[in-house]
Structures are given as structure tokens and as C-alpha cells.
Amino acid sequence: MKDRWWIALGWALGMGASGASAQQIWKCEVDGQVRFSDKPCPGAGQRVPERALQPNVVDSLKPEVVREAMGRPAAASSPAPAAPAGNACPGDGEIRGMETRASSTTMGDPERQFMQDEVRRARQCRAGRGRYTEADWAVSRAAQAAQTQISDRARLDARLRAEAMHSAADPEEADRIARRRIAEERLQRRQQEAWQRGQNAASAPRL
Figure 1 (tube, rainbow, N blue to C red):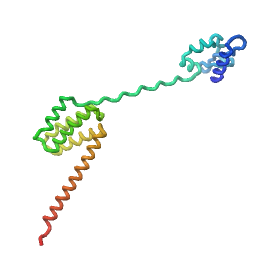
Figure 2 (cartoon, rainbow, N blue to C red):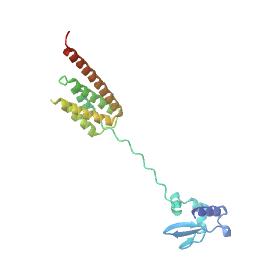
Figure 3 (cartoon, rainbow, N blue to C red):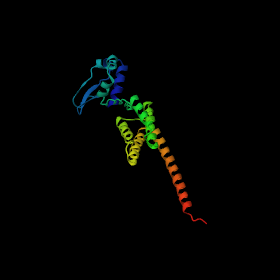
Figure 4 (cartoon, rainbow, N blue to C red):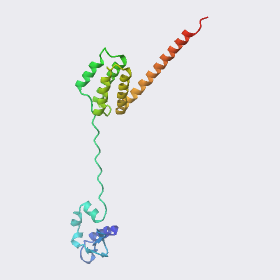
């Protein structure tokens, strides 16, 4: 029925929509909705006046009005793309404080290396690397503070938590952390093997 309405409307406009040559168009109500037809309505409805079929009137109809009249749903507007999440990073003052602590001679080598890594990661964040939140840097600050604890295990666990956070926030840093751990494990194995060979040599009977 909808296609017949457009055909009838185009034919009526082409003929000038005047006199007996104009096609009659009916506006009908079907199941509570408005429909147009070139046939009389089976129920409630009325004939569209010829004036409404003139080009200047038809052209003034907005697309959404025509779609509603034809029973076609309006096209859903595309949602606006979400803005990228902001990157929370330490400020210049905090980074300077981290640099001071990273140069402390009271820390061991692993702790000092971790502090230097945190300075580098903070600067990378300021340069736009990764996607960090304030909660992420709260983990980093807690790990930095833990590097002065007495327990070796507590210091190591804090570093591992911070590195897990950085790995989740920055894929490039995750790759760097993974490669460094592999290198450290290989070094530990070589040291363990060398120590074991030394023990075996010391325990071997002398001829």
C-alpha cells in the first residue's frame, strides 16, 4: 500500500494534480496508525485535498513527517563516539621527589632500581604513554613507600603489585617488564648452576 501511495502521488504531480485527471489519495486510519492509499479507506479516513498534492506543499514536508505518515520508523541517530579516557599522571613536584628517593644510598640495588623505574614510568605517562588512573598511581605510591620496610618479602611483593599495575596500564611497559623478568630468571639459573658445580667440585674426593 505504501508503494502505491508514492506511485499515485508522483502520477498526480506529473499531471498537475488538477481536474478529473488528478489521482485521488486517501488518508486512512488502520490499527491506530495513519496510512495513505489510492483506494478509499475500508474504515475511518478521508480523501486528501488536491491542494495538498501540489509540489510546493509536498516539498515542504519534512522527511520525519513523511516517514511517520508512511508508518516507517525514523532512522536512529548514531551515538557520538566516546571521548578517550584521560590519563592520570604524577605531577612535576611528585616526580622530583621520586627522583630524590631513587638516588638514596640507603636502599639496596633492587629497591633503587624499582624507584628509578617508577620515575621513568611516571615520565612516560606524562608523555602520553599508557592509560592510568589515580588508583593506579596509589598502588605505585604504596609500593614506593614499602621499599623502606625491613622485610625483603614485603618489598618484593609491593614491587610485583606495582609492576602488575603498570603491565595492565601500558602494553609497552608490560613487554619490557616481561623481558626483564626472563633475563633475571636466566641469570639466576646460571648463578645457581655455577654454585652447584662449585659445590660438586668441593665435595669430590681428591685422588
